[in-house]
Image 1 (cartoon, rainbow, N blue to C red):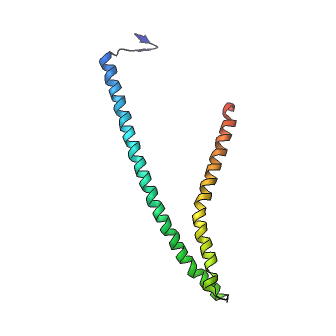
Image 2: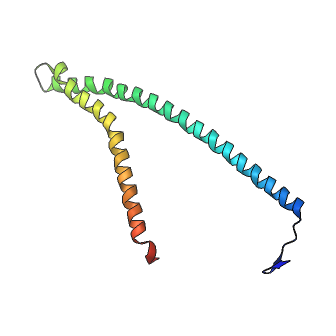
Image 3: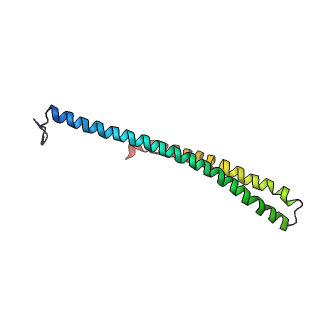
Length: 122
């Protein structure tokens, strides 16, 4: 039976075979997505662990340098006064990613609103 400029000549077996191929591709896609989700989740856990180690390492490096600087400029009790900026650096490394995520979310929402505003103009 002609459809447009093509002829459709598929019997029931061809249709069933094509449906099986499509179902197989869908099943393979589902398996791949599940494996990818598991991989991403494992990477997030590793990244979180390494980011905590990195933050502690940054604190351990910042504190002596700040204390030495305060000692060179003759601040009284530089080792005690170095705690405040070192802890501030540590706290910012904890809060920084949260601020970054919030700014990205805000920018994405703002971008989506602009897309909706100009949807009919194209």
